[in-house]
Length: 274
Length: 216
Image (cartoon, rainbow over all chains, first blue to last red):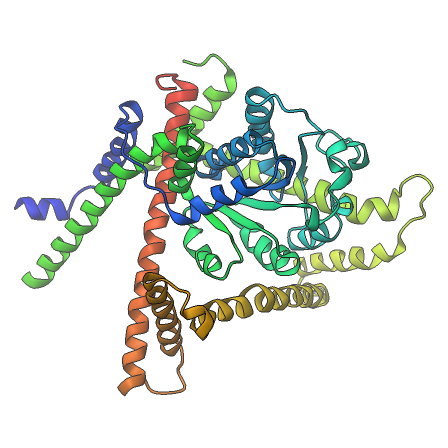
């Protein structure tokens, strides 16, 4: 049996092992591949830089723990930029399982790193069910949708919310989204009615779809997958999981490209021999 | 290595799931059944506490102090009960009533979303760069990009137009459209690989950092 025949009959578990090693070794021994900036990510950063201190940024945590490797680093980085610029952050979520992730990000960034005051500098309304219908109401009257925060405090008792009543009071909204409800609902139901500055951080699997909304101006920017999150970590100068993970991404992608090329060459060879 | 019980449970379940890559085994089955059971319980609880209780049952049966029951909620309650009629062959036809209602509402929402959120802005975005005042303001690369997008939209649409036979100029356009579609699928596949590798990175980072503490 020739080497090429052996390769074409390779046990797929060898491929699994190779991918596992390609991901694990760079995590243990980081290489530090450069992370190039892309325009859609830069635009999100630039827009936040233009906001006046005290402006309100709405962050919607629309993912669950399975989306966290890609979206949690982006959440942390955007929060860091917002609090560094003294913007006020208003957190909601359309995924119930995203609430603890949003809370953890606020504890890490707002409380531990920037010593911000809850209720004055940031609020967390947690899970808001209803998807599209909730967003339509949110844009019209925030008090209708967010009657109590995650701690049960009535919205009227939160100082930050005194002048935050509708979409007009939100300078910038960003959804960290991994599916439905998520970016689609924000674009179709919120932005289509209320306009304003909207961006999305999207898991890689859904990211290609949202490039079309950049050209039309429906989105001001897009943070796509772990690569986008790594770019944002570079912009705020705080490397995290996304930066570390990009070494593994690069090696694993090279390996997979190699497998694809090899597989096709073997396929053509078999076809020719027949 | 961590001392808390939860990282150990999470690590054990992660390894049990990944053990399927070697071959099917009892550890994988146990992890799979736990996941299915937890998911079913979680979503039942989720629907009750976030939708049924606050929106349907509370206003009808347990209104706030001083408020009168909202009897309009009898209608969605009745439609909801009809959903269960499909469990019995003799009554299954009645499920059409609530389904009709659900379809109507979904259709209404989707039509607005499609027109306001997609069709009009996307058509505008495709053609707006070719207005004279816009086109002269574009850089060379932006102009080329706009032309490529327009060509991609038209040729891809011709591929999905089946009222004419795909021959001659129309056939050539459809063929070019296929290439645009293939490039789009390739980009999506590349992103999909990145997403799946990201999941693996997330789990391995958890094992190495949070469980074993061999990396930060």
